[in-house]
Length: 394
Image (tube, rainbow, N blue to C red; front, side):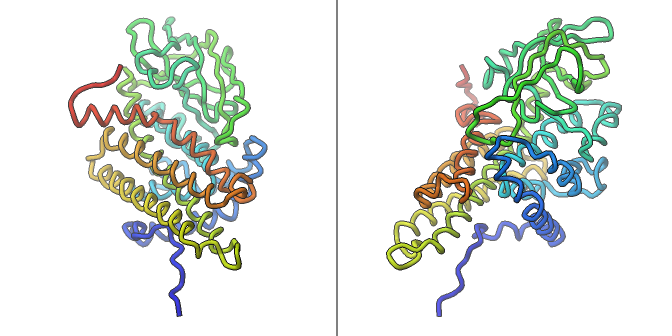
């Protein structure tokens, strides 16, 4: 009698590296996400609308407080746990995972790491319980990879206030966020600084970007800053140059590697499930050699991705994981993710382009994950400089 099929995408047992309480907590989170979040995901993606009821559902999980225990439930979780949490969120829906990641990682992370204690105490509690939602405004219409040296948004100090002028693009959560972390170049010293712009501030306009084919649920915005005046108290006090901004990005870049893994895991799961159920020529297509070849290539990529992101988070826990390791993880995993989703779409044939089978959504969303938080090329140059001590940046 044949052995039962091994349907687990964690073929080498990486989940076993977590403690038993962490595995139990993740199992509860997965069940909750399957029950409460997944039923909303496809319809929202199809309509390119944000389902605001998920905010309260995410708040019940206390997801926003996991990385900031003093503002959450007080429980310290390992970096490995937060990585697997990202995997679980992205396995359910990459768009809603991005909503959570922008709020929790980029916006809260900027305030937590770049603000002083008064600023953390002023904003983080409301963000942790998700009564206030954050956004992160760095990318500009004419500046993506070169934004560090070519930022056009400016900040000018006038007494106890700052005046911001410029434009930002691709700002996730930007259409409805209560707190937007805006990065601007100080006209006085030419250094990049961070500012928290609160909802309703005069001169701040956010317009939804329409027509996206990826991460459709995410409400990306074009933002215009026209003489936006904010107090000195809203300038992040520990951000003095783009180098400080890069520290925030280095932490979230590793998170994108986990995001890529979550996308690849779900695409593999969907393809495998389809292969054992879809009957052609009198038997499940999973019994054909070429289909098994696709599945094994997908599983190989997923397994390699597990290895690099797990080790990255272990190094972070030891204080040894740097920007170079995060850059390599992001470049490698997003490239392999792209292969996995393409093979999954191929395996499903015509059904691979229909939202009902979900693979089409993950196939499309992968393109955005591949591009943001530093393109493959830019992350490659970060690693290349590390291993040669020679800069190839233009």
